[in-house]
Picture 1 (tube, rainbow, N blue to C red):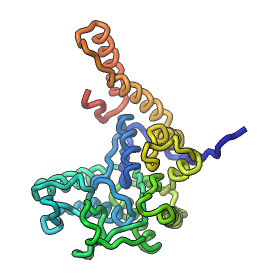
Picture 2: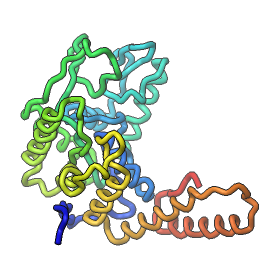
Picture 3: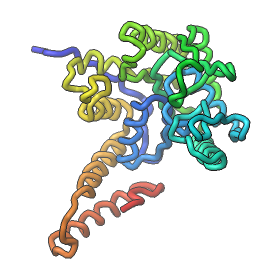
Picture 4: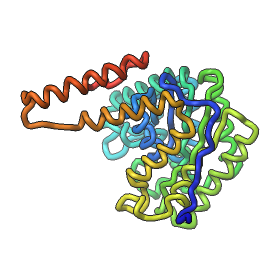
Length: 319
């Protein structure tokens, strides 16, 4: 007897290897998945522009990374004594223009370099809504808590959505490695501030546009992350206290589903062992000279060294 409708991710013929490079961009859920890939000691770069939700802004970000076009002073604005890029998350904001530009351009350079060698790109769209900054008549990625009177909010049209996805695919194909695999997802995080009906409309437009644009492209895939949380995990115990964001248990469940469909057996074993090592590294003691603790650390370091011998890239750098 079944008590829930399980949603599976279709198994991929092409698998993620231990040396593959994975670039991810998009909503905060993209960051959560990327964090787990990093814990598994795979090579990944996530969100060089910070958290971005809508396809138009993600397309612009990918184009900027593709062109390696640095930002300049005239592209920033000032608000609350900080220098701000409307293309970036507020984490890039600083009180000094040279610091904001340095942070932005360092991540842009890093993202460009990583993309050129990426085997996999994961794109997580969060919303079809976009804001226009009226003083500059510019569509923005983030409002930086600037008063709402300076913005006009609207839904991206279907044409704008499909054009954004199409341009994203073109630029990724041009800059990434041959045979790059592009994975599209829709964030399961509901944007309740937009309104529940409006959020559903927004997500539906994203799903429709993705499916329309990737049809017939064997290197583009749709991962049913949104559907897993909405249907498979249809219970508020799988959410955090805000009843909006998925719990750690839900994120881990989705990551495991993703891994079963896309990781090679070697990668599965590699990540599983690294997760165990990470858990052991969290162990703390009040007496570091305790012989038992010293023995524990020695055995742990031996395990880390065994893992390091399995890959060419550097892992467990902080240990």
